Length: 200
Image 1 (tube, rainbow, N blue to C red):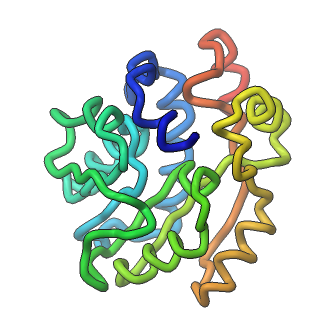
Image 2: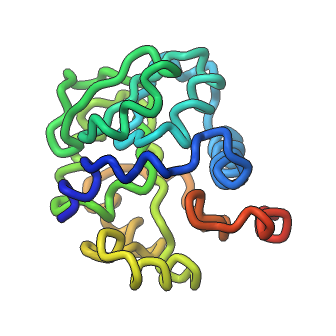
């Protein structure tokens, strides 16, 4: 069901990376992340499951375009093909890169769609030489929980609690620098009139 869902053309209705709801969703998270990480240490980056560029495009600005976007859906990649220099259609469970290829591996809203979460994290660990950043929907966010119940593709493999995600990461012997919950905005679903009230 996941593969069929993400490879179909109905995603052309998704909001672009420049939409106010999307920016209110992505920018605060990136600001928090880069309070912890030093830009000067990141020469190369890979985003796994880049979709239509919610994070890929703002990351490319911050990292001077030194980012590769990877997604298994050509439909999703078609949204950002003119905005990101290198895009690769591939599976998150079998990354087509050598060990230690990137300073940063970034993944947002991908793991809960995968059948083998541990294998995906192992692949992230294999191809990075410094940092992994993972963002996932929070099960205790009431709005996200409701959305997952109405959207089968979101609930198929269950959304995370922060403690659950930390346990999975520690099992792969990855040192956690920080982990936190943030935000109530869904980039594609939040009505625009609610953004000023939710973004803080």
